[in-house]
Structure formats: structure tokens, C-alpha cells
Amino acid sequence: MECKVVRVSDVMRTSLHVVSGLASVQDAIAEMNRHNVSSLIIERRDSDDEFGVVTVHDIASKVVAVNRSTERTTVYEVMTKPALTLDSKMNVKYAIRLLSRFRLTRALVTHGAELLGIVTLRDMVLGYAGSEEAAWDKDK
Image 1: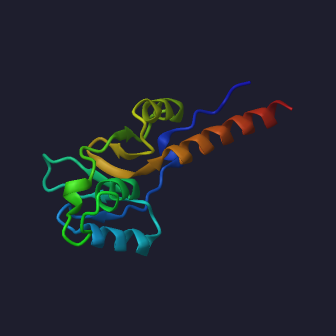
Image 2: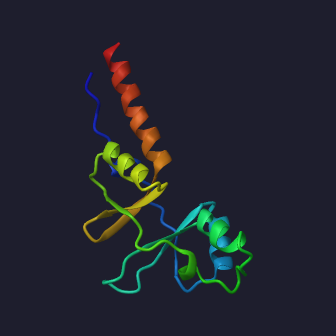
């Protein structure tokens, strides 16, 4: 049985929702609600900067749980930066291993310096499992 290699680019999402690090957490929550997403990408300030990510978990644990104001707290104060990035051509099996090792649920997808998308552990596991099922069906 030979499995087709699933690449990160095969399962990534290309619709990116970006916010400034100077935005308030309240603005970030509104943006998440507007797009029905649980994370936002923090734009780079210049070419020498790195991307960041803010998630619902970041907001829950670093703002809401400790009773900080969502209007007076900026995204910059609670985001994760630098965000973990995966090359678009990486085998999903290794990307899953990497995210699991660092206990992360998502990573940005790049090709060189270009941001292409975002991928979640869920997307990758389901995409990988789907490729194994296809290989099993082919062997029958």
C-alpha cells in the first residue's frame, strides 16, 4: 500500500484575516466574529519583522480570565510572535509532528518570504487520514 504524499499546501486555508498589532482586543474579537474564525494574523511592520498570530485562546487566557479590558488591551500585548511557519511543500506528516511537539494548533504557511495561508492541526490530520483512506480503497 503506497500513500500519496499530502503537502501542507493541499490542506491550508488561503483566506487570511489580518489585523494590526496596535488594534484593540475588542477590535480583534469583532473581526473574528465578522469572519467566523478563531485566529487572526498580525501584519508585519516591515520586511525585517515577523508575522504574529492572536487566537481566541490567547484572548481568553490573557485578557478575559485575568479581567483585563478588551478595549484598553492591544493585540500586541497578547499575541504570539513570531508565529510558527511551515513551508507549503512540507509533508503533512512532518508538519503534524512539529505542531504536536510544540503543542500548537495552527501555523502560517509560507513559500520563501511570501505568506500563502494558514493551516490547523485539524485540517492536516483530516487531510492525512483522507489520503490513507484513499490508499486503502485503492488496494481493495
